[in-house]
Amino acid sequence: VVFKRGRSEPLAASGKLPEEIAREVLKFSRAIWRLPSWKKGLARKQLSDGYWMMLATGDTTFTIAVYFMEPSGSQGNELGDMHADFERANEGPLARNMPPERLVFPQRALLEQ
Image (cartoon, rainbow, N blue to C red; front, side, top):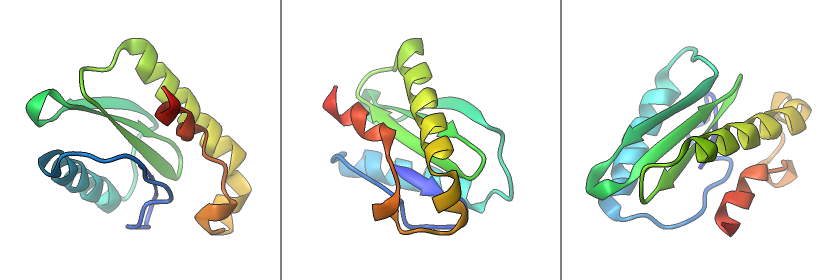
C-alpha cells in the first residue's frame, strides 16, 4: 500500500489480507496520516498471527508491505530502495497532485516475488 501525506485514500494497494491483519494495518496507517511530519527511513512491526508489517517513509509518501514471516534485512533494503525510487520518479507528479494512474510504482515488483 502506498500513501501520500494528507491523503487518506491510498495511491496504490494490492493483495488480500486476513481481516484482523487488515484492521491492524489500517489503524497504523491512520496514525501515520495524522503525523505533521515523519523521519525518512524503514521500520518494522510484528502483527497478529505471525505477520509482519514493514514501513518505508520518504519525504511525502510512505509504503507499507505486509509479510507472512519476519522480513529479512535484504527485503527491508529492497522495500526502502523501491520507495526511494518511487519518490524520485514521481517528484513532479506528486507535487502537482497528479492522479495515481499517472504515477510509476516500482513497488509492484514486490507482488511478482
